[in-house]
Image 1: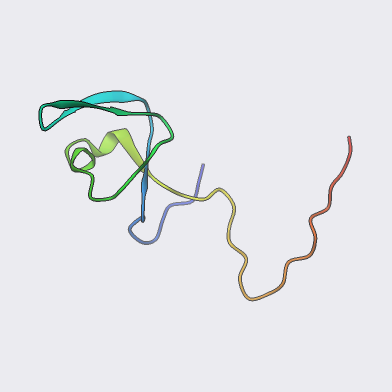
Image 2 (image 1 turned 180 degrees about the vertical axis):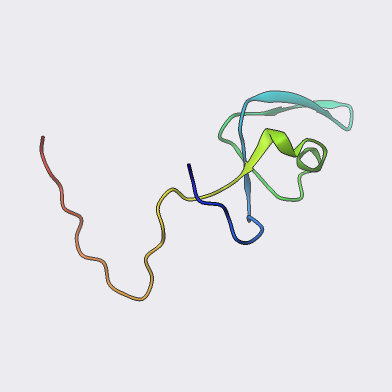
Length: 72
């Protein structure tokens, strides 16, 4: 499971595809699509969205070596 964000995320991700009626027009939200934090439907149904979290930690302050590639 990804780590919890410590600050408000800059973007959210759609957890499951769905269609919403926004201002009288259908809007398709696709699974994996990024959504801006000010999206009006995000405020109405926050359970359909999750914070965008990167799966690997960012290494700062030191140079990273070349990745090791292994053949199985």
